[in-house]
Image (cartoon, rainbow, N blue to C red; front, side, top):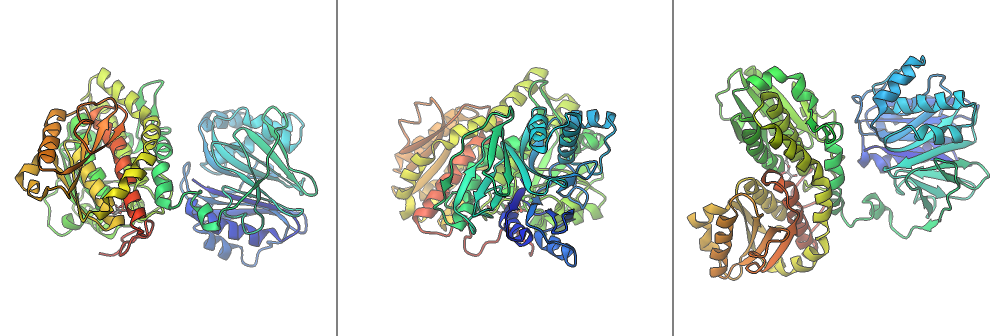
Amino acid sequence: MCGIVGYIGNQQAYPILIKGLQRLEYRGYDSAGVALITDSNDMVVYKTKGKVSDLEDFVQSKDVSGTVGIAHTRWATHGEPNNVNAHPHYSQSENLALIHNGIIENYAILKEDLMKRGYTFKSNTDTEVLVQLIEYVKVSNNTDIFHAVQLALTQVIGAYAIAVLERNNPNCIVAARKSSPLVVGIGDDEFFLGSDASPIIEYTNRVIYIDDDEVVRLERGKEPRITNLNNVEKPHQIMELEMSLSELEKGGYQHFMLKEIFEQAKTVRECMRGRINIDRNTVAMSGIIDNKEKFMNARRIIIVACGTSWHAGLIGEYLIEEFARIPVEVEYASEFRYRNPVLNKDDIVIAISQSGETADTLAAIELAHNQGVFVYGICNVIGSSIARNTDSGSYTHAGPEIGVASTKAFTAQVTVLSLIALTIAKEKGTLSKELFESYVTELSSIPDKMEETLGVSSYIEKFSGIFTYAKNFIYLGRGYNYPVALEGALKLKEISYIHAEGYPAAEMKHGPIALIDSEMPVVVIAPNKGMYEKVVSNIQEIKARKGRVVAIITKGDTAIKGMADYYIEIPETCECFVPLLAALPLQLMAYYIAVVKGCNVDQPRNLAKSVTVE
Ligand code: F6R
């Protein structure tokens, strides 16, 4: 995810662009840049690795005059965060400068073709391919920038919101979108561009939301021109925004947490992009392939993590042992770092962290390194300390997670662990071809099933209010769903301050059953896979003691429907991927209970997003 912003009008562009970038910084913060047509009619590009504040430092004493400009804050996908990969990117002749939010899937083919035609590339980004392609199309068709963008985009597969400046055409910005958001703000003789309305709302509440496959030209003194890629004019509606700035920053959701819960189909799709090929039924995690020998010969994998990431690690244990037949242990990083563990040279440590900055996880990595053990990282934040301090790794690509309670990072971590387990299994031949392919097919269908699962939101909202009386909750699950029970309980504790315990369902008889009475809500994850009948018996035992059951069941299940006080249906999937669906209603339940209780969902008391101290 990246943030893009643009301005053309009568005011100085730079201060507007910088403020816009600050508002969009939640979308990405590994590098930032700006392109301006200066008062002396020159086009300049300033960009640097780091945050928007680093860009501000970088441009001090540079010419930032001008009333036209575009700017970008990056969340790296292709190419590490550095000064060269930062946006804007110049075309070969430096006549064009372009910013981009999205991923160009066919960039490799386009790049190869452009290289054959003599184009050279400075960065590792897919974005530079786009700006070179537009220049090539413009020159070879002897056409204007607006038409060149239309033509070039017909060759592009992927997601983009782009904005282009042309050195020799200083009164114009051309922008376009597909699958990445783009908003135009209409002021008095001025136009604004943004990934969302947050950089715009301060200046005007009149906006046009650009649709997929639309190209827009913003020219001084003229109406915006919007067409499709075939140059057919598209009628546009100017909307009057009534939202406040803070709401807009949350994309219209009441809280970042809710927004992030609803983003999960998209983030899991993003996480699988380029790693899973459904047409060829293949999975390839480059970090695993690059270290194939290590993983093939690993005697043991030890997963270290904290909190929600530790819960994802527990699911990873089930996945890796089942698919790849390597013994796995999962440790709290805070325990591992202090307990003098026995480590061998052919062990692998996998460290999981959303923020990549958790102090205990960093210390666990250091301990493993000191004993000569190879460490693989699974991180969300690009360029974070854990990403830098591990020997290899995979990013989860869930985008910045702002809500303190982790939601979309969790499902992205489980997705990465599934991809890792499948990649090792393929290399080791530990799954039959049929089983492997059926898992690949099923995993690729998960984002659609997540969308379907999120459809239950309003039902959950309705019944969750009933449970605000509760002082305690029990969450039960078996197999793959035992960690989901732990995660559901953690979400509730964190944001609603209700005490909750997660247990393997069969453990109930060994103690927790004593707690059950008519006041006790018990959430049971009971899909029609795994030990279904045994979990059904657990539900009967709870009901016999008048407990109140909320059951997560597979669509079409009738037996549990008749027993549970409330049931939430999730689509059918294989046992190993149920956590990716079952986690969503539990997140929603925790969210709605906390909202009804009037808790500060995004900033729960005593918690911080990133635990950088012990
Ligand atoms: C729970 C939560 C925390 C984090 C934990 C580890 O919602 O957010 O439990 O999971 O602090 O953080 P990371 O994954 O950044 O290492």
